[in-house]
Image (cartoon, rainbow, N blue to C red; front, side, top):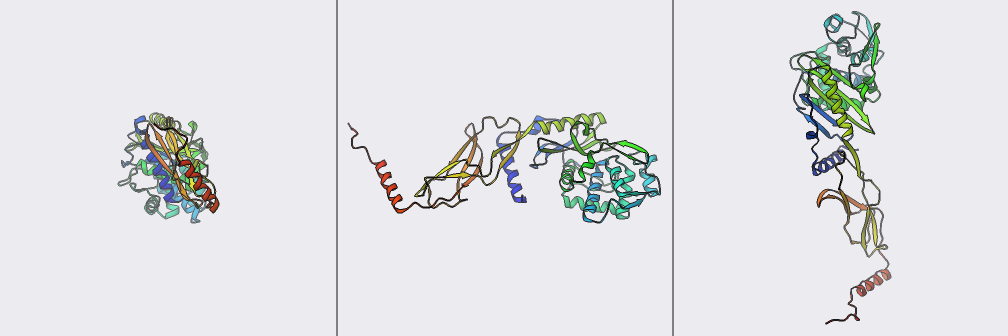
Length: 390
């Protein structure tokens, strides 16, 4: 699907959603100071609250670190088999004595990039993030340059990264909208890597640590949690149900319990309170338009593409579909010629119109057939001589 077609589809969905009087945001509220809920398939925002407010990222910055690493592996600039030495900086700032999330990397030990990625994503190791940055870019500042370049390419317009782990740093910021865009990018661009975000534990250096994402046991399959005193408790997660995938991002909560509770509520809202409805199927005959002077009197009408919309569950109650032809169409009619439209109404109000096209060609009738048709029309219009008049 081209960008233009995707945009047209999104605008059609938004127009119908607005016409239905749907207001998803008013149907849900969260204690999280900043949050967003995205439907991945349509790109429609189902809920948002202060989604463009810049906040410190905490460990959610590691999603950007992961994006850079995955991109370098994909391009051949790096390999999971590459090994990097654990520097004293990584050991001191991100190790066991740092007081933050750690992979417990021993200083001066050689560690494979494959293990470091797992330590970064599953264990949220700050030491793993530093070793990755130094190994792939030479230093933390140089890796941050890669992070910002990648962020710009992806479309993160209100975020800036200073380090790969998300610990407090002047100028470092993200927004929930940008994090939702980043999660969407990770899911779609690296489908073979994405399952790492759902792994529930990882054992390294004799220590097993569990994934901190509270939604993994409740239906989600990624992505990441984060916490600092400045940012509060945050989370970026994704879940899928009945072929629909959502992404949610929220931050600023006061405890792990509140984060788990509010994230579960937002996830359930996104998966349970909306439904995808196919209003029109491409190529399916929807009615007919009359043809004047043709070999047949009508031509079937079809849409060129599906019209599938995401709407609040039950909001299409009372919606009616009418098929209107542009007829009579003068013969000949070409296959694919614009010939009518499907109109969706409710209570006399038009909600959506979809163009329809001739499903087949109709040739001109023969001369004799046209003469016979003309005579038949004249007889049909002539007054009845046997009728009485006063």
